[in-house]
Length: 330
Image (cartoon, rainbow, N blue to C red):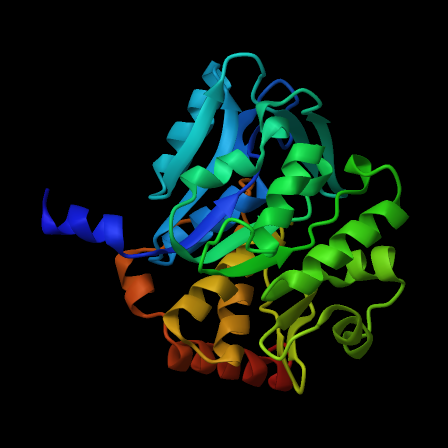
């Protein structure tokens, strides 16, 4: 065994992300032509963090079918460690997405997907990590999948890493919003970092006010709440602090995956030990990159781009953007 292999076995990963990934067939103009890409909130975060230089693993279940192989190979090709069981009795989930100038139309075919059988047993493949990342999509899939997420946020399996939870509301997966609100609130209160969009907050809790959401969710001094407000700004809130940062302007092709990309940037910067404003900025940078493409993950960085990422470089970029805004169009 080489030294590198020994280190991989002993050093914790930066993040383990657990949840369903489907194959998305995406069309833009011509309905007879589709691009097959992976689509899954948790694998999106794993890929985004990997593209920033983090070591990540994605844990899930896939069908033992060609689409499952496509998902496995596509995610592994981005540098993410794949720990997925292939289920011969259930298929890989599928969705279609048609992107137009007026918005995106999506349809899901996942009611019998292999990922719906996710359970606490799947945590045996998680390994050691600084962060465990789960979302509010998984507990809506099945009772066993809900038990898995509860085990993660309550540390029932003894994992030592911290927990990131993205609310990621999918109303169609829940019997009603009241049920979703009850489950997602309890999971949020147990996580270390909670990501929520202002639209999700309004639907679930009837408010988008940062202070009210913090009072509702935060239960410990070491928790963080990150409230995302789309193309406007995002705020990171602790028990006694709040930092907000504006988003970057971007040409939008498809907004799908923007929240996942933001979470990937924020968590990666947390792993780097960056201050909160730099974490927000890296989240916004990742979000601005993904909305410009049809895929749900941002394009890979060049080596030079990665080398140039730092809190100081991001601060300079935001200062330049603010200066342009103040000057107005030329």
